[in-house]
Amino acid sequence: MSDPSASSSPAAENSGKPDGEPRRSFLAWLAALVTSALALLVPVGVGVNVLLAPLRRRPGGAQDHFVPVAPLEQVPDDGLPRRFPVRRDTWNQWTFQSQVPVGSVYLIRQQGQEVPLALNARCPHAGCTVGLAGGGDREAGFLCPCHKARFRPDGKVITPSPSPRDLDPLECRVEKGVVLVRFQNFVVGVEERIPES
Image 1 (tube, rainbow, N blue to C red):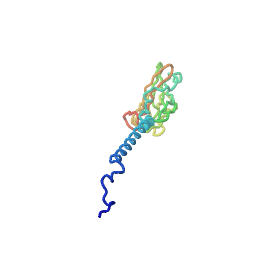
Image 2 (image 1 turned 90 degrees about the vertical axis):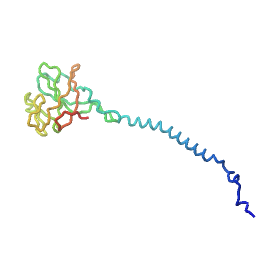
Image 3 (image 1 turned 135 degrees about the vertical axis):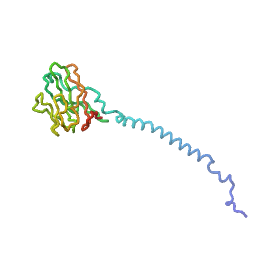
Image 4 (image 1 turned 60 degrees about the vertical axis):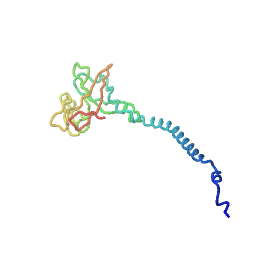
């Protein structure tokens, strides 16, 4: 005699859920997951793009522009060097600052000249700010207080010197009675004039 519970027909085993339903449930779950991920990916992608956009901006772009330094009337044509601070708007990825001091220049205007000679006041040796030698005498030139590098009134280095090159000249122009300078710092300690990035 056989036990009726021991042998069951195949129809009795499949009487629960149809055979394809677990697979359909998994595919529906997977489709919902992919759709949700795609729906979430768009706003997250836009947010990340907005957040990282400043990193793609080049913060050094202001170096390509002339900045106002002084009214021309403050640079008389007597051949004496005068130092002026340089200020400009700066960006550092996410932050904007207005009129930040970025250095200083010497402006020298000879008699009859409209556009002065502009020299970066930073010593090419180690980056100290050079001062006037001889109490501002026109012929005395410039002296670096850090390592005693000397420069002629036109910015040429007086050898022997710790400075590897002359004072760095800067492009200069006058517009509407204002002296504008394309201010830029250069790598110190090397003979070649290499713009800092």
